[in-house]
Length: 97
Image (cartoon, rainbow, N blue to C red; front, side, top):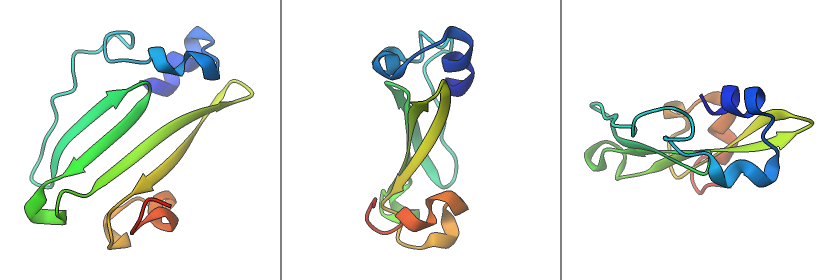
């Protein structure tokens, strides 16, 4: 939804702070599962927090950046075991590098 909104509305880097659930036409995210405690959206940044009993409350954060009108995502995470994160986050595992 974030990428689509940015593309459709011509949002530039300075407009990222306005990306909220409401501006994206979404209801507040209310997601959880066996392994994920919550998923939150603020200023276009998507943060997934894992269940403490699964990964000690570790997080995975997807941060959008706009380059030439296209959204480029950067992943950071505190998940130590790289098998549990998408491949593009594996270089960032164990410390949010």
